[in-house]
Amino acid sequence: MKEQLIIILIFSVFFNSFSQNYLSIKPDAVSYYYATGDNSVSPVRIDSVKINGDSTEYFSFRMIRPVPNSMYYTEKGPSWVGNKMVDCGNGNNLFFNKNNDTILIITNSQLFESWKMFSFINDDYVEATITNISIDTIIGLIDSVKTISLQVKNNSGNNISNLLNSLSLKLSKNFGFFKIFNFYEFPFDTSPLGYYPTSQELDIIGISNPVAGWQNIKLFDVFTMQLGDEIHYNYSYLNGPYPGAYSQNSQIIEKYLNRNENSTNDTIIFTIEICKKTTTHHYSPYDTVITSYHDTTLSTITTSNDYFDKLPLEPFNDGYFWGYYNKVDSFGYQPGDIYNPDFNDSLTPALYNGWSDTYYIKKFGNETFQFYNYYNGDQASQVFQYYNVNGTTWGSPYICDSLLSANNIIESNKEISIFPNPANNFIFINSTDKNIDDLNVQVYDMQGRLLLTKQITESNEQIDISIIPQGIYLTKITNQKTSSNYKLIISR
Image (cartoon, rainbow, N blue to C red; front, side, top):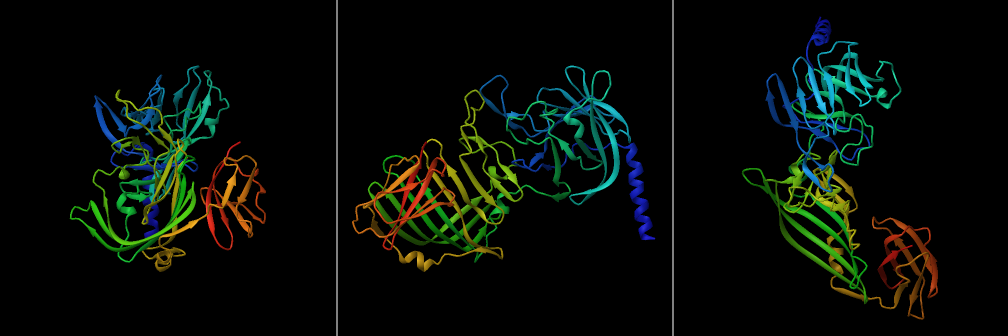
C-alpha cells in the first residue's frame, strides 16, 4: 500500500507539472554550476530585483569584464548568465547575451512544444523543443525536469547543421536550471576570451536553499585546526637573476597549542609552536648559511569583511587591486587575473597574469602556494610535508630536535662554480679543489622535480642540458663533504 501511494504521488507531480511554470532561476538561493575543464565553479546569485509593470527583472552579481571599445575593464560587468533575466509573465523568461540579444525560455511549455528561442542576424534561428518531462534526482533533489533540445533552422524553417543542435537545457520545476547555458557567450559563434566559464553547457552541482551538493568554501571552513593538530611544510625561495641572488629552503613544523574564537564568531586566534630550519645559499660569494628557530607565536584569522568568503568569480578589492577567486571542489586559489583600479572608475588590463596561486585547502589552512614574478624572476613555493589535522594524517613528519641540531652553520663553497650561467645547451662544473671527489650534479625545476642527474669526476667536465627547456632551475652539487645549491638559468 505504501509503495502504491508513493507511485501515485510521483505521477501526480508529473502530470500536474505540464500546466505549471518552471523556475529558470531560483531568486532566493545561490545556485552553483560547473563543467569539467572549467577553472572554477560558476554561481548565480540574484542581488537585485526591478519590477516594471507586469515584468520583473533579476540581476545576478556583477563580474569583471572588458569595457567595449576600450583598453579598460570594469568590475560592474554582466554575469555569465547574461546582464539580466526578465520574467515577462506567462512563463516567458528572457536572457541577454554579450551583444544584448535576447534568448527566450518558455517555462510553461508543454511536451513536444517548440518556440523560436534565438534569432541570428541573417534570420536563421534556434528552435527550442520540450523533448522530455520526467522525475529526476540531481544532487539529492527530486523534481520534475523538462529537457529542452535545440535545432537551428534557416529563415525558411528548414533544419540546418550547427553545433548548437547537440546542446540541451534541463529546467526543474522548483530549483531552476539543472543544466544551463553560458548565456553571456550564447550562441557561441566566437570563442570566449578566457574569462570565466568557457564551457557551453554547465550542470548544477550545488544550491544553498535548500542546502544540497557543493557549497561555497569560506574562511572558517579552511581554518578548522584544533589543539594538538600539526602541519609540516617545505618552503623554497629563489630570487631573480641579479647581484645578491640567493636561494632558500626551510623545513617548518607548526603545532597548534590553543584555539580561541571571539563571541561574534568572526575571529580565530591560534597559539602555535613553530620549529624551523632554514638553509640559505648565496651565489656571490658562494656560501651556505643554516639557521634554526623554535618559538611560540599567535596567529589571528578574521572573517570580518574578508574577501575570501566571496563567491567564486565575484569581484573583490583587497585595498590595492581588484580580483576574484576561482574555486573548485574544496579548493580555492587566488585569481589568475588581478586588476589595478583606475581613476576613471575602470580597471586597467590584467596587471599580473597567473603570478600567484595561493591554495586555501578545506580544513588545512592557506599555507600552500606557488609564486612566480614575471618581472624579476623571483619564485617561491610552500607545500605540505606532513599533517595530522582533524584526525587525518598524511606524509612523513620532520623531527624538531633534528631541525634544531644544525644552528648557525656557515659552509663555504667558493671552490665550486657553474658556467656559463645563463647557459644554452651545455654547462661545466668548475672546482678549484685539485683533489676533486666524485661530484653528483642534480638539476631540479621549481616544483622540485628532478630533471637531470650526472656524476662527474673531473673539473670543467661538460654536462649536456639540451633536453631541459629554457627557464630557471635549482642545481644541487654534492660530494662526500658538502652539499651546495645554485641557481641555473637556461636561455636559448
